[in-house]
Image (cartoon, rainbow, N blue to C red; front, side):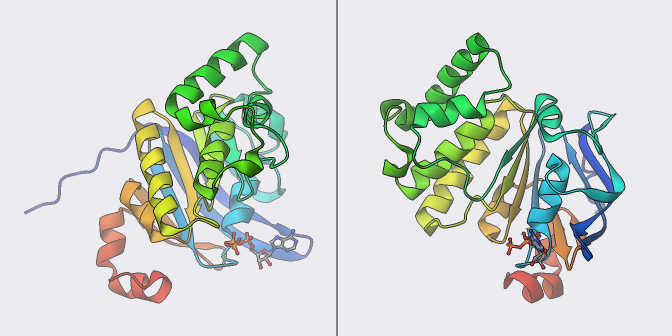
Length: 243
Ligand code: ATP
Protein backbone atom coordinates (compact mmCIF):
# COMPACT_ATOMS: atom_id res chain seq x y z
CA UNK A 1 0.00 0.00 0.00
CA UNK A 2 1.30 3.45 -0.83
CA UNK A 3 1.78 5.79 2.10
CA UNK A 4 -0.66 8.69 2.36
CA UNK A 5 0.94 11.89 1.08
CA UNK A 6 1.63 14.26 3.97
CA UNK A 7 0.13 17.70 3.31
CA UNK A 8 2.70 20.46 3.74
CA UNK A 9 1.36 23.56 5.49
CA UNK A 10 2.24 27.00 4.08
CA UNK A 11 5.79 27.88 5.04
CA UNK A 12 6.14 30.37 7.88
CA UNK A 13 9.87 30.22 8.56
CA UNK A 14 12.44 29.20 5.99
CA UNK A 15 16.13 29.06 6.92
CA UNK A 16 18.44 28.19 4.05
CA UNK A 17 22.16 27.40 4.13
CA UNK A 18 22.73 28.93 7.55
CA UNK A 19 26.36 29.24 8.61
CA UNK A 20 27.27 30.84 11.93
CA UNK A 21 29.73 30.58 14.80
CA UNK A 22 31.80 32.50 17.31
CA UNK A 23 34.88 34.29 15.99
CA UNK A 24 36.96 31.73 14.18
CA UNK A 25 34.85 28.82 15.51
CA UNK A 26 32.32 27.73 12.87
CA UNK A 27 29.36 25.96 14.52
CA UNK A 28 26.69 25.73 11.80
CA UNK A 29 27.52 24.39 8.33
CA UNK A 30 24.74 25.15 5.86
CA UNK A 31 21.65 24.37 7.92
CA UNK A 32 18.27 24.20 6.10
CA UNK A 33 15.07 24.13 8.18
CA UNK A 34 11.46 25.10 7.54
CA UNK A 35 8.50 25.58 9.87
CA UNK A 36 4.97 25.64 8.43
CA UNK A 37 1.98 27.60 9.69
CA UNK A 38 0.62 25.88 12.79
CA UNK A 39 3.33 23.25 12.59
CA UNK A 40 5.37 21.88 15.52
CA UNK A 41 8.99 21.16 14.70
CA UNK A 42 11.43 19.51 17.11
CA UNK A 43 15.13 20.12 16.56
CA UNK A 44 17.01 17.28 18.22
CA UNK A 45 20.71 17.15 18.83
CA UNK A 46 23.34 16.11 21.34
CA UNK A 47 25.15 18.60 23.57
CA UNK A 48 27.17 21.02 21.51
CA UNK A 49 25.51 20.09 18.19
CA UNK A 50 24.65 23.76 17.66
CA UNK A 51 20.95 23.94 18.59
CA UNK A 52 21.22 27.08 20.71
CA UNK A 53 23.47 28.74 18.13
CA UNK A 54 20.91 28.04 15.39
CA UNK A 55 17.98 29.40 17.42
CA UNK A 56 19.97 32.51 18.32
CA UNK A 57 20.86 32.98 14.65
CA UNK A 58 17.13 32.96 13.82
CA UNK A 59 16.57 35.73 16.36
CA UNK A 60 19.60 37.77 15.29
CA UNK A 61 21.43 37.11 18.57
CA UNK A 62 24.27 35.34 16.72
CA UNK A 63 25.50 36.72 13.40
CA UNK A 64 24.79 34.65 10.31
CA UNK A 65 27.85 34.60 8.05
CA UNK A 66 26.09 32.88 5.16
CA UNK A 67 22.52 31.84 4.33
CA UNK A 68 19.05 33.37 4.42
CA UNK A 69 16.22 33.52 6.96
CA UNK A 70 12.74 34.25 5.63
CA UNK A 71 9.60 34.70 7.67
CA UNK A 72 6.27 34.84 5.84
CA UNK A 73 8.34 35.47 2.71
CA UNK A 74 10.24 38.44 4.14
CA UNK A 75 14.02 38.34 4.41
CA UNK A 76 14.99 38.79 8.10
CA UNK A 77 18.65 37.83 7.80
CA UNK A 78 20.05 41.30 8.52
CA UNK A 79 17.26 42.64 10.70
CA UNK A 80 17.67 43.64 14.35
CA UNK A 81 16.24 41.29 16.96
CA UNK A 82 13.45 43.67 17.99
CA UNK A 83 12.34 43.97 14.36
CA UNK A 84 12.13 40.17 14.12
CA UNK A 85 10.05 40.08 17.32
CA UNK A 86 7.66 42.70 15.90
CA UNK A 87 7.20 40.47 12.86
CA UNK A 88 6.07 37.55 15.00
CA UNK A 89 9.06 35.59 16.31
CA UNK A 90 9.38 34.90 20.05
CA UNK A 91 12.23 33.23 21.88
CA UNK A 92 12.18 31.32 25.14
CA UNK A 93 15.71 30.71 26.39
CA UNK A 94 16.61 27.97 28.86
CA UNK A 95 16.50 30.55 31.69
CA UNK A 96 13.24 32.03 30.40
CA UNK A 97 12.18 34.28 33.31
CA UNK A 98 13.46 37.04 35.59
CA UNK A 99 13.35 35.38 39.00
CA UNK A 100 13.37 38.56 41.10
CA UNK A 101 10.43 40.09 39.23
CA UNK A 102 6.78 39.26 39.76
CA UNK A 103 4.78 37.13 37.35
CA UNK A 104 2.91 40.22 36.19
CA UNK A 105 6.17 42.07 35.52
CA UNK A 106 7.61 39.16 33.56
CA UNK A 107 4.54 39.07 31.34
CA UNK A 108 4.67 42.86 30.89
CA UNK A 109 8.31 42.58 29.74
CA UNK A 110 7.30 39.90 27.25
CA UNK A 111 4.65 42.25 25.86
CA UNK A 112 6.88 45.28 25.46
CA UNK A 113 6.42 45.43 21.68
CA UNK A 114 2.62 45.81 22.10
CA UNK A 115 0.78 49.00 23.02
CA UNK A 116 -0.51 49.21 26.61
CA UNK A 117 -4.12 48.27 25.87
CA UNK A 118 -3.20 45.31 23.67
CA UNK A 119 -0.62 44.17 26.26
CA UNK A 120 -3.28 44.20 28.99
CA UNK A 121 -5.73 42.23 26.86
CA UNK A 122 -3.00 39.76 25.98
CA UNK A 123 -2.12 39.28 29.67
CA UNK A 124 -5.80 38.46 30.36
CA UNK A 125 -5.78 35.88 27.54
CA UNK A 126 -2.65 34.30 29.02
CA UNK A 127 -4.11 34.24 32.54
CA UNK A 128 -7.08 32.33 31.09
CA UNK A 129 -4.68 29.74 29.62
CA UNK A 130 -2.52 29.63 32.80
CA UNK A 131 -4.88 30.23 35.77
CA UNK A 132 -2.16 29.41 38.31
CA UNK A 133 -0.17 32.42 37.07
CA UNK A 134 -3.19 34.67 37.59
CA UNK A 135 -3.59 33.48 41.18
CA UNK A 136 0.03 34.26 41.93
CA UNK A 137 0.51 37.22 39.64
CA UNK A 138 1.97 39.52 42.30
CA UNK A 139 4.42 36.91 43.62
CA UNK A 140 8.08 36.75 42.59
CA UNK A 141 8.85 34.26 39.83
CA UNK A 142 11.36 32.66 42.21
CA UNK A 143 8.46 31.52 44.43
CA UNK A 144 7.04 29.28 41.68
CA UNK A 145 7.76 25.57 41.30
CA UNK A 146 10.05 24.51 38.44
CA UNK A 147 7.08 23.53 36.27
CA UNK A 148 5.18 26.73 37.01
CA UNK A 149 8.27 28.79 36.24
CA UNK A 150 8.47 27.11 32.84
CA UNK A 151 4.77 27.94 32.29
CA UNK A 152 5.64 31.55 33.10
CA UNK A 153 8.51 31.40 30.59
CA UNK A 154 6.05 30.21 27.95
CA UNK A 155 3.51 32.89 28.93
CA UNK A 156 6.21 35.58 28.84
CA UNK A 157 7.26 34.50 25.33
CA UNK A 158 3.61 34.39 24.21
CA UNK A 159 2.88 37.83 25.67
CA UNK A 160 4.01 39.50 22.42
CA UNK A 161 1.37 37.44 20.56
CA UNK A 162 3.87 35.73 18.23
CA UNK A 163 3.18 33.52 15.22
CA UNK A 164 6.26 31.38 15.89
CA UNK A 165 7.46 30.42 19.34
CA UNK A 166 11.10 29.30 19.37
CA UNK A 167 12.10 27.41 22.51
CA UNK A 168 15.52 26.34 23.73
CA UNK A 169 15.29 23.12 25.78
CA UNK A 170 12.00 23.68 27.61
CA UNK A 171 12.72 20.49 29.57
CA UNK A 172 15.91 21.91 31.11
CA UNK A 173 15.96 21.47 34.88
CA UNK A 174 12.53 19.81 35.03
CA UNK A 175 11.55 16.47 36.56
CA UNK A 176 9.80 13.99 34.21
CA UNK A 177 6.43 14.91 35.75
CA UNK A 178 6.89 18.59 34.91
CA UNK A 179 8.23 17.71 31.45
CA UNK A 180 4.92 15.94 30.77
CA UNK A 181 3.05 19.02 31.96
CA UNK A 182 5.04 21.28 29.61
CA UNK A 183 4.49 18.89 26.67
CA UNK A 184 0.73 18.92 27.40
CA UNK A 185 0.69 22.74 27.58
CA UNK A 186 2.49 23.04 24.24
CA UNK A 187 0.17 20.49 22.71
CA UNK A 188 -2.84 22.62 23.76
CA UNK A 189 -1.22 25.76 22.32
CA UNK A 190 -1.01 24.16 18.88
CA UNK A 191 -4.77 24.40 18.56
CA UNK A 192 -4.37 28.20 18.44
CA UNK A 193 -2.60 28.01 15.06
CA UNK A 194 0.76 28.88 16.59
CA UNK A 195 3.93 27.46 15.01
CA UNK A 196 6.45 25.92 17.43
CA UNK A 197 10.17 25.27 16.99
CA UNK A 198 11.52 23.34 19.97
CA UNK A 199 15.21 22.51 20.41
CA UNK A 200 15.48 19.51 22.70
CA UNK A 201 17.45 16.48 23.77
CA UNK A 202 14.42 15.04 25.55
CA UNK A 203 12.51 12.68 23.25
CA UNK A 204 9.18 13.28 25.09
CA UNK A 205 8.71 16.27 22.80
CA UNK A 206 8.58 14.02 19.74
CA UNK A 207 5.01 13.12 20.79
CA UNK A 208 3.80 16.54 19.64
CA UNK A 209 6.15 17.01 16.66
CA UNK A 210 4.79 17.15 13.12
CA UNK A 211 8.34 16.87 11.79
CA UNK A 212 11.78 16.50 13.27
CA UNK A 213 15.23 17.76 12.32
CA UNK A 214 18.38 16.26 13.82
CA UNK A 215 21.44 18.45 14.13
CA UNK A 216 24.76 16.59 14.18
CA UNK A 217 27.97 18.57 14.51
CA UNK A 218 26.35 21.67 13.03
CA UNK A 219 24.77 19.87 10.06
CA UNK A 220 21.26 18.51 9.51
CA UNK A 221 21.63 14.71 9.70
CA UNK A 222 17.94 13.88 9.42
CA UNK A 223 14.81 15.80 8.42
CA UNK A 224 11.42 14.15 8.20
CA UNK A 225 8.49 12.64 10.01
CA UNK A 226 8.84 11.36 13.57
CA UNK A 227 7.62 7.95 12.40
CA UNK A 228 10.52 7.77 9.94
CA UNK A 229 13.00 8.75 12.66
CA UNK A 230 11.59 6.05 14.93
CA UNK A 231 11.90 3.53 12.09
CA UNK A 232 15.46 4.65 11.47
CA UNK A 233 16.97 2.42 14.17
CA UNK A 234 20.60 3.21 13.59
CA UNK A 235 20.09 6.90 13.90
CA UNK A 236 17.78 6.62 16.85
CA UNK A 237 20.07 4.27 18.76
CA UNK A 238 23.18 6.27 18.03
CA UNK A 239 21.81 9.54 19.27
CA UNK A 240 18.91 9.06 21.61
CA UNK A 241 18.65 5.48 22.77
CA UNK A 242 15.20 5.13 21.19
CA UNK A 243 13.91 1.65 20.54
P1 ATP B 1 23.68 22.39 24.51
O1 ATP B 1 22.52 21.51 24.60
O2 ATP B 1 24.87 21.91 25.27
O3 ATP B 1 23.38 23.86 24.73
P2 ATP B 1 23.71 22.99 21.71
O4 ATP B 1 23.36 21.98 20.69
O5 ATP B 1 22.69 24.03 22.01
O6 ATP B 1 24.20 22.25 22.98
P3 ATP B 1 25.48 25.22 21.23
O7 ATP B 1 25.22 25.80 22.58
O8 ATP B 1 24.89 25.91 20.05
O9 ATP B 1 25.04 23.70 21.19
O10 ATP B 1 27.05 25.11 21.05
C1 ATP B 1 27.67 24.69 19.86
C2 ATP B 1 29.17 24.93 19.94
O11 ATP B 1 29.44 26.32 20.06
C3 ATP B 1 29.82 24.26 21.16
O12 ATP B 1 31.06 23.77 20.74
C4 ATP B 1 29.98 25.41 22.14
O13 ATP B 1 31.09 25.20 22.97
C5 ATP B 1 30.22 26.58 21.21
N1 ATP B 1 29.74 27.85 21.80
C6 ATP B 1 28.49 28.09 22.25
N2 ATP B 1 28.38 29.37 22.68
C7 ATP B 1 29.57 29.95 22.50
C8 ATP B 1 30.11 31.26 22.73
N3 ATP B 1 29.35 32.24 23.25
N4 ATP B 1 31.41 31.48 22.42
C9 ATP B 1 32.18 30.49 21.88
N5 ATP B 1 31.74 29.25 21.62
C10 ATP B 1 30.47 28.97 21.93
